[in-house]
Image (cartoon, rainbow, N blue to C red):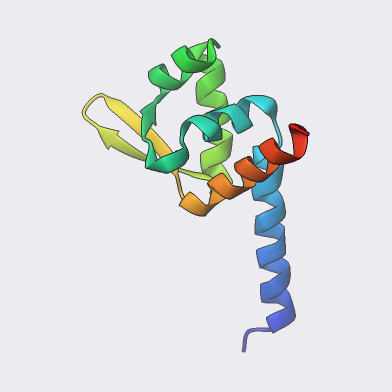
Length: 100
């Protein structure tokens, strides 16, 4: 039998890990570029942000590992996109809270 308190604790842990993964300026910028159902490759993201491709890959790996992003292989390229579109509301909220 599943203990409801454990299930809630697991969900809270997952939510906390997602927020920790998002809590980096570069990762917030990545998510901002992926809003609205956009799918971008590592190359496109690193060019948009003006950072090294290896750094971009590192941040994408963290976001994917924590369930924030998904990826899809298309030929030689891999496109990244938000796992849940509603995550863009977190970014919108942060933008509103910091632009007083």
